[in-house]
Image (tube, rainbow, N blue to C red; front, top):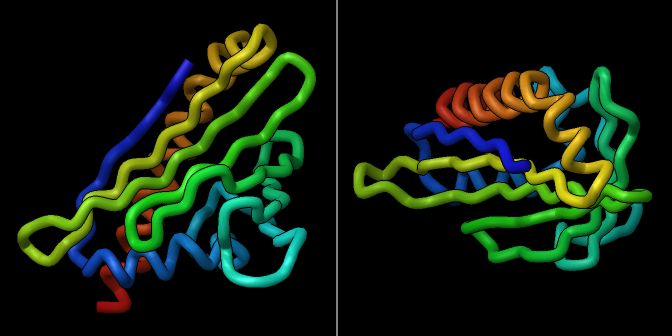
Amino acid sequence: MERSTRIDVEAPVEQVWKLLREVELWPEWAPTVTSVRRLDDGPLAVGSRVRVEQPRIPPTEYVVTVLEPSRSFTWVATGPGVRTTARHLLEELGTGGTRVTLSVEQAGPVGVVMGRFYRRLTDRYLTAEAEGIKARSERQV
């Protein structure tokens, strides 16, 4: 089961990318994130491991599986019977702004059940995170 949201931000893609890639600072602008801790050093890259804590969701360790600078990154968390894939996509708009698409996919036998159970919560979190990206990015223009 996949859930997603999209929002247009009046800020250049490079600025929005900087905000997204600094995952340790997400709790400053995302009310749905209480803690983000990098489990390795260096810039965010394929193979980077990150522990994310959110209200009403067990702490989750993600591994970055895809990263295209200034465009997107995907990270994946796995557990018994579940695979959670979160995608963060930026598209440059002709106006100098950025379209942000955030999505979460729950797969596997347990993941499908979790996806249904957490559907409303996931939608609220994705919307709040997109709005946080927009507010923080536009404030820095």
